[in-house]
Length: 93
Image (tube, rainbow, N blue to C red; front, side, top):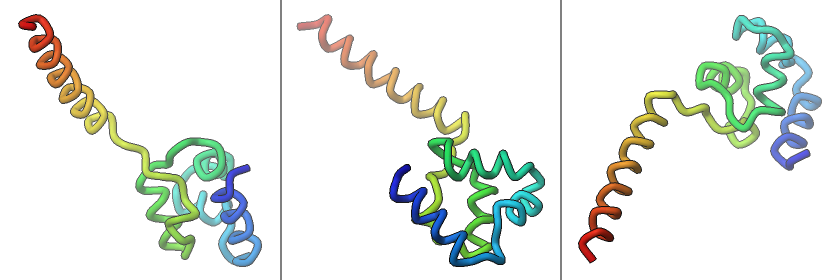
């Protein structure tokens, strides 16, 4: 288990009024879904992280925000354009 996950577990122990169940209720999803995002997924939705921070969980204990498909597609397109420019330069040489 990573240090972030260990520290998050410790935070929940030290703050018994905030639980995965209370966050899940505010998020409108199951506790298993929230637990999965916080401990097992590489990132979490921005709205879940906002709820967690609103409950007092420090941002450094939370996973990074999940990037939107639109952001990923835009980055992919920019990289493809750079690659095409590079390949064009290689063809001239």
